[in-house]
Amino acid sequence: MFEEKSRSLVTDFGYPGDGKYSTVGTNVLASQVPLHTGDTTKAAYIQYRSMPNATRQGSSVQGFEKLIGSKGEWGKYNKCYHIQYKPVCYPWGALFLNANPALAAYRRNFTRESLPALTVDMTTSSDVLRQIPMEQVKARAWGSMQPEFGSDFSLMNFILELKDYRSVVKAISQNGKFFDGLNDWYKLFKKVLYPTKTEHRLDLTIPAASLLLTHNLAISPLMKDVVKMAALFKQEVGKAQVAFQKAGAVVQTTHYSEVFTHSDTRVTPYGDYFWKTSGTWYRTKYTATMQYTYDYKMRPDFAAYCKYWGLTPTWETIWNALPFSFLVDYLVGIGKAFAMVERDEMVKLYERSYGESTKVIKTFGGHFTNHSRIHSLTFWKAETLEKCYDVPREKMNGILFSGYTASIYHRYPSTPYKGLIIPRIKGPSMMQSMNMLALARLLWR
Image (cartoon, rainbow, N blue to C red; front, side, top):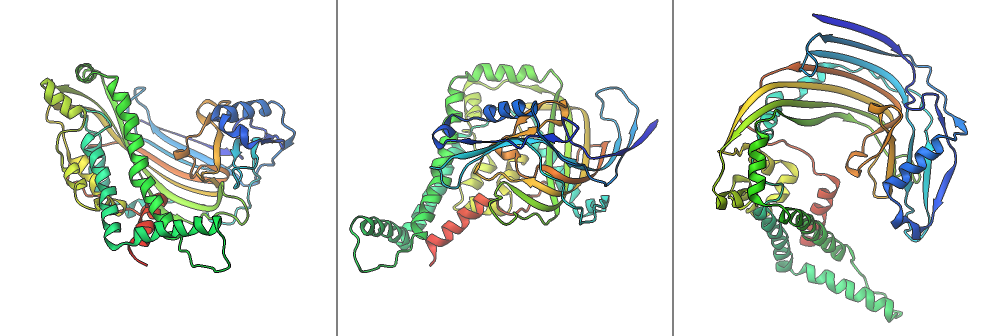
């Protein structure tokens, strides 16, 4: 049996729902920024929320919502179809760092941005789902949700990450341009300390590129792995194996998601608006959800130790052993695909339920970025009404704070697709693009 409900929607102001905000901002001395945390921004947000002095006006655009759902037992993966369209003007607070670190930062305590004029067609259609290679996505979902004994740390991959950096350094050193770059730095310091009337051409892009690669390919991964190792040293492999076995008797829930962008016209406005983009973002989020239990056959101590510390050879580690394989992974997720293919031979999986959902979303207006100058961001938490939360940097990018949103959500019981796992073709991230450009700059000029 299906139930259908519908209603009209006005501008969603979040909490409080009256559109009020505070125009009061706070300068934070540069010396105080290291002491400032996300909790500090959150505390200021809550404080100034209680003393607003201005109000944003809602949009004249009329929104709507329609829900069609099947009745079923609570907690079950019932069929659901949901359509929504509405203007939004949510409250937020943030600490913005100055471009010059020596100058004061600025905190917006509890604010809202005015709604932009609606200048685009917000029509949203499920037809865009035809653009998604659904069988490939479903296969990756099934492969990624398999339970496996071990930890998040792999000693073999840790060693191979150092190999990536060693391969880069070897290639750079063979053509001599790396050392030319170091010589440019020497010339620069010599020029600063002992200025002369004769000007010398200095190409600082080469040493800058070498420093970027050193940080991204060696220092940063090394520090992350050292932190993981320190946490793992506190655990005993035997206890971890027993805990993993016991967990199999309890129903577990796991999720897998992929986002596909159909169009994206967001751009950063002119001026010092590093923290936001304006425009339209049209995308689909696919999510698979599985509930399961499993049986686990205990490994001998040495085998468990090797598995836990990532000393067992896998197809992923073989791939990572190839020179410059990380560059290929920037464009095609071959390493991740190999990881999805791997199965723990000591685990027998029992599926309890399996379902999928697609959410086609179109947003227009102001979206947050995850720029490094956004020290901390506090945003309204829709799930608990009056509460707010400190947004992690990896989740800042793309949050709509003022504009219009339209979505079509479809959830349905399904069966997993256990076919061939094909790597997803993707574009490199900003940091990966910088690594590629830095490497190209060092090898060719």
